[in-house]
Length: 100
Image (cartoon, rainbow, N blue to C red; front, side, top):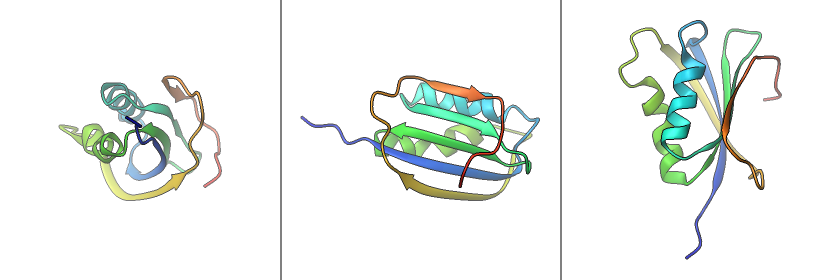
């Protein structure tokens, strides 16, 4: 049986820095069996790339936002990316500017 794998980029806007967002994303991704990374961007937004089963990718945003009193999402842009072969784990990156 072949397993479908997708990679998606999620660009989060709003109150998403300084509120534990990246660590919630890390927990959610690991819980859902996803690989990838999450990072703060210079403009106050957060960029995440996650890879795994489409049905798990569909759940990751809800898992990040679930029961969060401090995160206030005002916009979310998502796009599909090419799969990164042999990627392992999910990391929290310190920041920097990533292409969108």
